[in-house]
Length: 163
Image 1 (tube, rainbow, N blue to C red):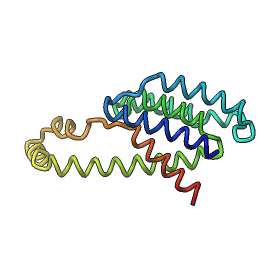
Image 2 (spheres, helix red, strand yellow):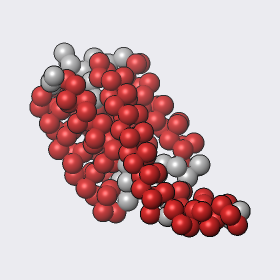
Image 3 (cartoon, one colour):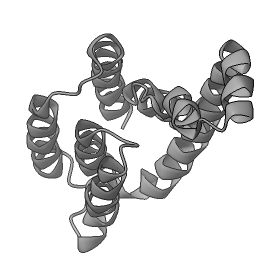
Image 4 (spheres, rainbow, N blue to C red):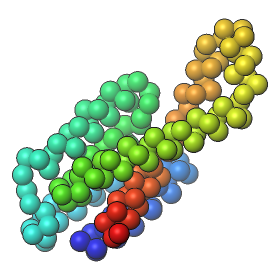
């Protein structure tokens, strides 16, 4: 399991860096993760037991990610990458990793929200006074790279596994 954790960690470091620089996650990672997941099921059958439950979180990320994409909250690559990442993650860690992902998303979102408020406080006050709601919406709507958040969640999972 340590080798799998470190392999996924290595991939996440690369993907997080590229996503931070380009704000895109290539579909090549989706293909790579799916192929690696299939290999894991053959190479490590004691860790990777195939059942329908393996697909609950990946399908949830595809469906939920589609709606988040339509709402302009999450990029399409983020949800596809997460779905493929959960295929590579052993089933026994799905729920725990999801909890860490929610936690890291909330923490990162709160920090970014506070940062945007502190940097744009004057603009926000002016927009509120003038009732320029589109201006306020523009301040808060910009996306952020999500792969570093995924990486943070993986690190939190690793911390909980080895404590």
